[in-house]
Image (cartoon, rainbow, N blue to C red; front, side):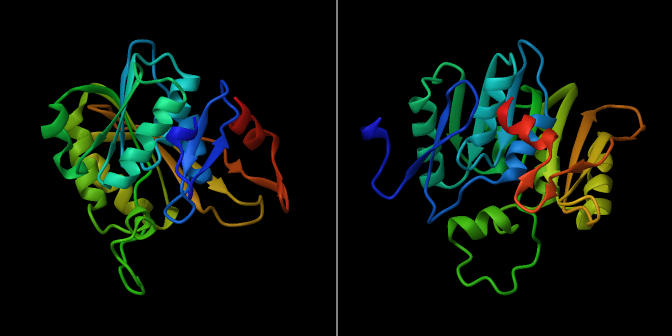
Length: 245
């Protein structure tokens, strides 16, 4: 394990099947949005799953723990992040189940081929504004802002990568909801399920989870709200269950 972890990195427990993940606090560490997406997404036995913009590799690792997917792949453009994610895969002895590939989301269908996956997931950059960025090339900026790809790029590639009736799962911000849904529908990925995430029961939602189906019929189900905290620093039972199962 020592050989897999560099001096400036840390190893965090994931509370699932004894899995761990390597992270670099100076670059980018996964947040609750990744945990919520992995809990919201599903994969059937035998499915092939692709995570677009995988970062630390957290979503493929968490989904391997909770599903019977045949194989999972993470695509990451940043070489240092992809290399670190590959080491996390080795740390958990998952080399036969998970691949981490370095590459551009905009080239994903060329890298993997059209109609190659049953499930595609993405926790994409949320922000479109570049104003105020001190260093637009650092890992945190790339993870949070649409510097290297746009929402339209992600949707376009997901539509090409998925098989007919394949599922696309995302976590994003509600302030972009109109754009999210319209781009999905325009690409032939019909939004089917949506769940809004609220920090507290009396606050506005700050995240949205969406499932879309390639070639699906137009019918959207809005699930009950997901509340994160019942009081400051105290998770609701549903959130605790997502972290532990």
